[in-house]
Length: 491
Ligand code: NAP
Image (cartoon, rainbow, N blue to C red; front, top):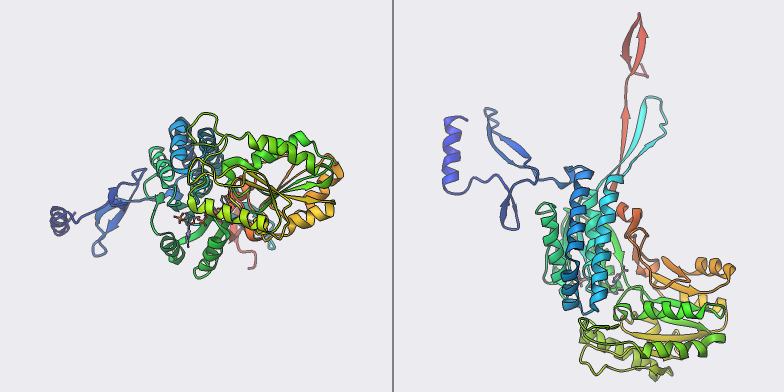
C-alpha cells in the first residue's frame, strides 16, 4: 500500500470511519464464509481494502440445505418450549401447539431437501449450432406477511422455500403473535443462516406492507391472511410488478351423503371444525348433511360436541382454547345472532362461555340456509352451521355458491360419486372420506378468491424461482489436412 493510501486509511481508522464489514441490524458483520471483495484505487490499481462479500444465493444448494436442516433440528430440539410460547401468545391447547412446531419444522426439512433439486431443462434447439437451456434462479428479496392462527407454521411455510432457493426474506408476523416468529428467527441464526438473510420487522401493518410493496428490491410478496388484505397487497404489487402468492380466506363445505360411513364422518367433522377453535382457513364453515341421515347425524354430533372440554390451553385435556381476542368473539356472536334471527336453531352452545371474554361455547346451529351471513362469511370460531340438502346436485350447487375455493370435504361410500363430486367442487383441496389434511409434500392453496399460487410441495418452490432461458451458439470443429479447425456453421 502506498504511503498516501496508508495515511488516508489510518486517519479514517482512528476516527472509526474505515469499515469493511457488512452492516446488518446495526451490527458490523463478516461474510458467513469469510469471503471478501477487493476494493481498488483506480489511479494506480492498488488494493485499498477487502470488504465482506455477503451473498446467500452464492452458497451452493447443499450448503443452504445443511443450514436449513440444522434449523429444522433446532426447532425439534426446542419443540416443548416453543409449543409453550405458541400457547402463551395464541391460546391453542399445548398438544396442538407442539404439533404446530413439528409441522412448521417439517416445512423446513422438506425444503432443505428440495433445495438440492432445483433442476432446469435442456430444450430441443431449432438450429444445429444453438443450444437452449432453462435455469431456475432465486427471485430475489421476498416480503412475507403472516397471520396469527398458525404463527410458526405460516412463517416456515414461506421462509423455508424462499431460503432454500437462495432468496433472502423480510418477514412481518402478526402483531398478535410475534414472539414465536422471533424465537424461530433466533434459531435460524444459531443454525448458521447468516445475519441479514432472514429479517423480521414488526409495527404498523399497512405501513410495513406499503414499504415492502414500494421497494423495487423486493421481487416477491407472499401473504397469508384475509382476502380483504390480500386484495390490497395484490393491487399494491402492480406498481413494481412483483410476483405474488396469496393464501387467503376459506368457506369450507363438509358434505355428508346418506351413504357415508357415519362414524368416520362424525370423527372427521369434529376435528375439521373445532381444530384451533375453528380458527383455520381449512376449518369446516358449513356442514351439509343429506336429509336421510340429517336427524341421526345431528344427534350423534351434538353428543360429542357437548363433551368438548374448553379451557386455558395449558390445562390438561383441553380440546378447545380461547379465540384470539374479543373482536373475534364479537364477530362469531353477531353471525350466530343473524342466523337465529333468520330462522336457524341453536342445537348446542350458542353463546359466550363462562370462562371469560375470549371464550365461546362449542356450538351447532341447524336449519341454516346458504344465504345467511354465517354461511357466506368465514366464521373463524367454534360454530358449526348445518345445512340440510336433498340431492347430490343440490349439495354441489350449495358448496360452490361462495366466492371462496380453498378446502372442501365430503363423505360417501359410492365410488362413482367420489370421483364425480371431487371434480365438480370448485376447490383447491378436496378431502374425500378424510377430514383435516395437510402435508409439507402436498400443494396447499385455493381457487377463486381464496388465493393465488401454492405453498408446500415442489409447486411451492416454483413460487420463489425465476426462469431464465439461456440461448448459446458455438463453433464447430472441421477436420482439414488431419487437423481440426473451428468454423462457424453459417460461413
Ligand atoms: P389479516 O388481518 O389479513 O392479517 C394477516 C397479516 O397481514 C397480519 O400480519 C397483519 O398484521 C397483516 N396486515 C393487516 N393489514 C395489512 C395491510 N393493510 N398491509 C399489510 N399487512 C397487513 O388476517 P388474520 O386475521 O391475521 O388471519 C386470518 C385470515 O388468514 C383468515 O382469513 C384465514 O382464512 C387466513 N388464512 C389463510 C390460510 C391459507 O393458507 N389460505 C392459512 C391461515 C390463515 P397485524 O396482525 O400486525 O395487523
